[in-house]
Image 1 (cartoon, helix red, strand yellow):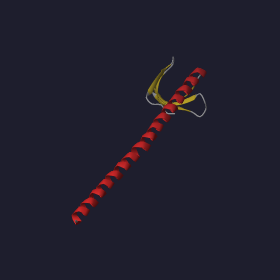
Image 2 (tube, helix red, strand yellow):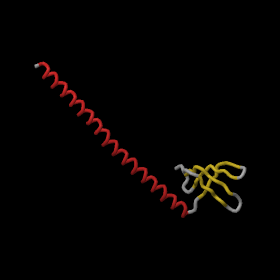
Image 3 (cartoon, rainbow, N blue to C red):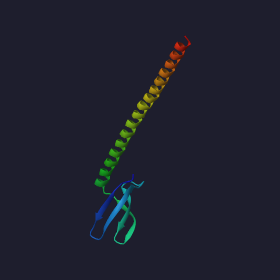
Image 4 (cartoon, rainbow, N blue to C red):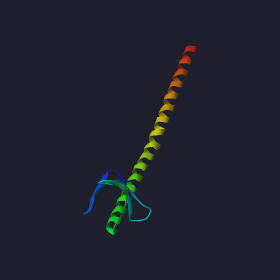
Length: 108
């Protein structure tokens, strides 16, 4: 899971800012690309039990939101695309019938 924005962390020794936090495959481990005074590099964080539970809830909520958006998008495309196709076919049929009627009238 990638994160956006910048997070600023302050401890008694250093102040640093991190962009793009990522969950590692190991539970409770985060990796981030951070910048500090005169240095830049990857920092690994180990989460406590409460933080890990909160992060799991957050990732589950994000996954649920993504699934809802994807489902809504799929429903939208499955309804809208056929409507345009049906409209095109009806308009084509109307034009064809009009041309055939015109030709019939002109032939006498």
